Image 1 (spheres, one colour):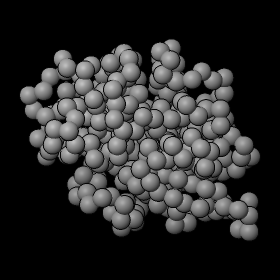
Image 2: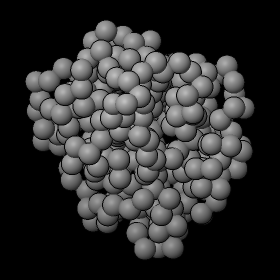
Image 3: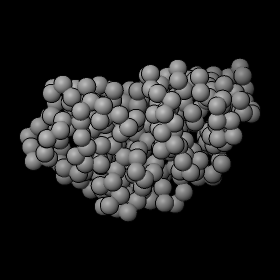
Image 4: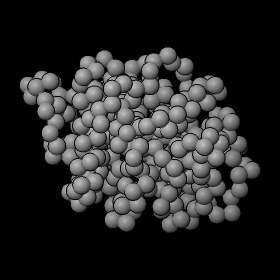
Amino acid sequence: MNQNSSPLSLAYSTCPNDTYIFYALAHRKIDLGDLYFDITLNDVEHLNQAAKKSRVDISKLSFAAIGHLTEGYGLLRTGAALGRGCGPLLVARKGTGLSDIGRSRIAVPGLWTTAHLLLGLFMDGHPDSVPMTFDQIMPAVSEGRYEFGVIIHEGRFTYQNYGLECLMDLGQWWESKTGLPVPLGGIVARRTLPEPVICQVESAIGQSIHYARQNPAAADAYIKDHAQELTDEVINQHIDLYVNNFSLNIDDVGESAITSLFDIARSKGMLPKSDQPLFACEKKGV
């Protein structure tokens, strides 16, 4: 691909972990060779639904969405949000118990998010879910519009400010059930792209993470521009939690976590079956 070719469409979220990961790539602080990108940022569920319509070449998606879209998109080994102690939380106002959850409408950050999929697995069924952007959930539950909510991202650091308490850490529940880290989101590439291009993108994302780690203050302004008035402390907690060694390379443990999530969800009819390989580029680009 040269500069005169059509750039690849690239989409990722406004969350600090993604802007941290992609800063160097987006600002060409690393050698991208002949790669050029048309970049958009949005809420992760918006990205999930855009990929559903095949609107983007390279995108951050929830793993639940990836499970729906494996025929058209393959996973990259770099850029993922996957780990331990970082899963979504089921919250409610103080004094609320879990006994009524099966009869309640639950605010969730999107029907194709991993948070919603984990909620369904935890409840062993299909919850009565109301999708909304993740930043609206805590106010909606705090104000009593919904009895329960599933929160993601920096919500795990701020929910107590809304008078809420955690009834279930769905990531911890997953870890205790499987012994595996919880897969939250990953970067996918359209399978129709040439494999050398996909591997080049995969490598570039890894280089972008290395740049961020070596230049920790370089991305500060870019992250804060998209961080929805988060404090520096919350931004740093967010990045420390969601950017880890799995972000640099999804290893065998990470792959087991993802395939286990897909297999369990497929066995319950929550994801479609697929014979496609998980990864878009089998040769590691990092």
